[in-house]
Length: 309
Ligand code: NAP
Image 1 (cartoon, rainbow, N blue to C red):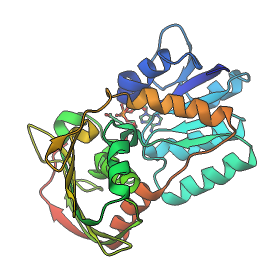
Image 2: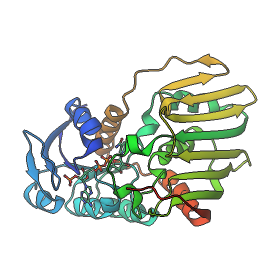
Image 3: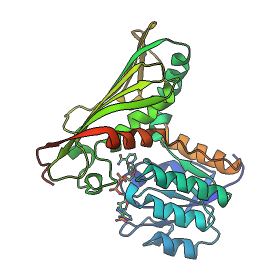
Image 4: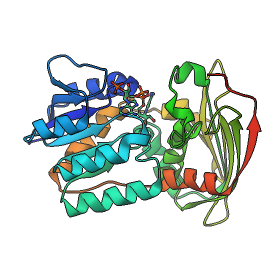
């Protein structure tokens, strides 16, 4: 890693503190010089209350990492790209597919790197699973991505608002893995979305998909699950079952546990961002978000009991 880039974070909340700040501190290719957050403060860097003020004051800044909820992603990314910054987007990369397509075009016009991250794709099980599945005959795929929303999203109102995705906020992580490890494209055929009467987004969903060889891909997402999370993907093949568990930390193939490297999702994301900037490249894959959008397009909406915020 040669060049070091100056970096700012916008939206310092749970994921910025849990993952981004430590990952940046551990990467000599980036120097965090500023943040923009309405309430949060970070020590030893310049603090701004909004991204406009940050961009106006930080003319020498190279890159921005956007960690606020998805509803403000587009406006923040657009401002950063127009100010000539490279941009890294937390997942989901936008509140709609069209926003992300527009950002991709804007980044190209400004000759800047746009990196739409999918952190779960950097889980340890993903690349070994992809390599094994490449040469296999797949019969069926089953995704179970279930957790307790009150444990994992305490006090987060934005997940229940339009653009907040509801249970697809974690579910899209599973879709990011599925679209990476399967050798063919996945198409949504139908869905059921369970929407609490006091929310705009689903608390649970079932997706029926196929791949382009008509292999069934079924996903169950549920936020009413607990206390132990279920973040699992099973792929049935003619050579046995491939099972990803714990969100990608565990992999079992045909009954044999596979030895995996230690988890380093966000360290890998910042290494990738650095590489993309250094090579004048982009990485924008909208397929996980497109499947979620398709579920909202084709899904049957069923009202369920109020969540009670
Ligand atoms: P969060 O803590 O609720 O939000 C992050 C911060 O964004 C907030 O603390 C807030 O800081 C700022 N913010 C909130 N609403 C805003 C608005 N309308 N305009 C501008 N800034 C706003 O959420 P999070 O859990 O970190 O998630 C943020 C993103 O990361 C989401 O897209 C999520 O899917 C993704 N993500 C989360 C996790 C996780 O485990 N939580 C894991 C992976 C990815 P200020 O009040 O200081 O402005």
